[in-house]
Every structure is written in structure tokens, then in C-alpha cells.
Length: 88
Image (cartoon, rainbow, N blue to C red; front, side, top):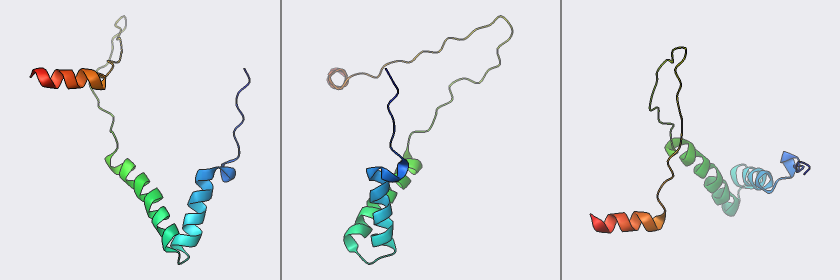
């Protein structure tokens, strides 16, 4: 299967929304576009500020011949979470 071609960044809908929000809302005087700009950039700011941070569990140096296994634990489904809360 051939890799999917991506359109240039300046043709993406997100880019067009951002550029219009800056032109018409921030530098212009349109309250609707100003609200859209506040939503777009506020969301990005909040995600960077309060987003998940990586959690360091172990910081060790491995000696020759030692190994480490890394695996993930799947989070419980919503149904399993509800069931666990009721039993406690």
C-alpha cells in the first residue's frame, strides 16, 4: 500500500481557521473570530500547561548481562471501573 500523500500545511482546515482567527479576530475587530482565536489558542495553552507529564518510574544503570522488560498495563474499561467502585 502506498503511503498517503498529505496536503501542504497551508491548505489544512486548521491552518485556515487559525490564520482567519488571527487576521479577523486578533488584528481585526470581529468578536466572533476573536472568540474562535481565544478558543484555539486557549485550548492549546491549557493542554500544554495541564497536560499529562511523563512519569519516571525507574532510573537505573544496567550492567553488562542484565536486561529489563518494559510492558504496559491496560487501563480498566468504564464498566470495570464502575464495578470496582460499587464493591468498595
